[in-house]
Length: 380
Image (cartoon, rainbow, N blue to C red):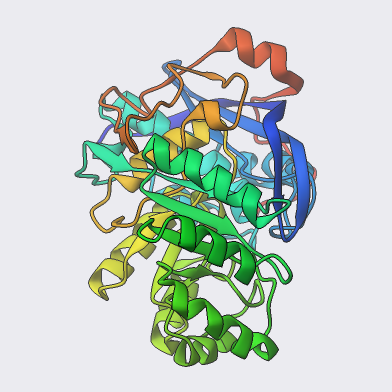
């Protein structure tokens, strides 16, 4: 493995507009700012990562603004001009900062991309992936009516998506799920609650058991693994944890407590590819399936998700839908495409996609180049 020394990092903050508004229990939005992190090594190779943040701290405590601050003032100064022998080392280099997992992931994934390109390997191969294609699911935000949801599900079933994820919340749950299940009795269907319920809703949530769902994702508090264990004992539907899992240790404790039967791995939420691989391996060794969740990423984040999903224990279709389902134009070429619910794993070096510089420049609202380790804050 050829080592890497990063000589500069460029932060490209872009403004992206979704094709249509996306609604969860957190709220509705259509625009988001994303910081695309370009790490450049001494030989001129560029690796790319992104902050899978929103503009508001509703999913977790981070926003794009705070992630950029953490990258500039704390994280990049820690790694720039340092010889890195293996991309797994980046995780340990950044542990002096607590949490801020999405900011850490943005620079860590960029460095993985540099390593893969420098060693002329597809990123999927570098991380130990074995698949040449992955199955894809579709996430659908909360709709204005059950009828509208059925219409949306019908479109995506027709396109061949291998899993349908429906966002739910109190007042938009049982009637919606029932309508979908009546229309599509055999569709691979799951519900995502985004922490909208409490243990007081156990009897209500039990009613979901009749619909043969693949899982219910994060029904209780975003930082909980205790109450989820109680809930899982009371319902037949498998519980999947998302927001509660920020690290290998979180996953280990959740499995030990019986808090879930499935884990959704999001690269940004757990701090990067290294920690994602560790959680994957833990779940594999314990017979717990995993899948890769989406955060409305640009093509850069989607490329990392595709590589991660090539690992063997990603047995449930993820949320990495084609670019055209979210953006009028993506910033990679070629864009991510799908054929009957299948996306091909890229075989070229690194993430396997090229950043479209012309589109990038047009969408950029702020750009900063960091070439030194100077910072206002002392680095431990």
